[in-house]
Image (cartoon, rainbow, N blue to C red; front, top):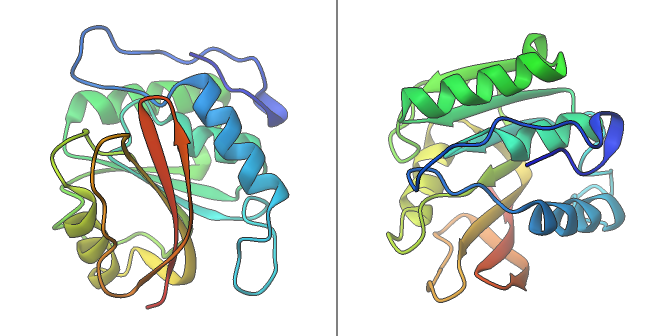
Length: 188
């Protein structure tokens, strides 16, 4: 697993062994970030990545937020209920020299602790097949983790049914083999 573009392009990331964490593939991540870099996603017409405050919920390795930092995001919060995932994300951030821009928070996305900042760009990549995204989006919104107008990218399994909760506008969705990514706007 590696950073696919930006200032850290080609740098390797620590990846998990076993099946407890399922990182987004390099190919899917590259497609996602090409879409983010070249689309007019933000409500005010600004760029989605440059200067963004990023949330990586269900962070696993932290690859999504670290990729955003490589593309010019300002800072990132990594949220996961597994200490081992947060530790891996922290080690990856340290390897890239990005730890000073990062916050690592242990907690459930559906009932998160207080937000360190409101994200303008958020990634949710929960385990497939468990319908964790809607309650996580609601919890993150209520707890102030998402700025009004934030762009939210939700990855679900290709066969998973996903209906965004109230307060989120569906902008687009893209299919990638085993995954589907939904692009939403937080209306809060």
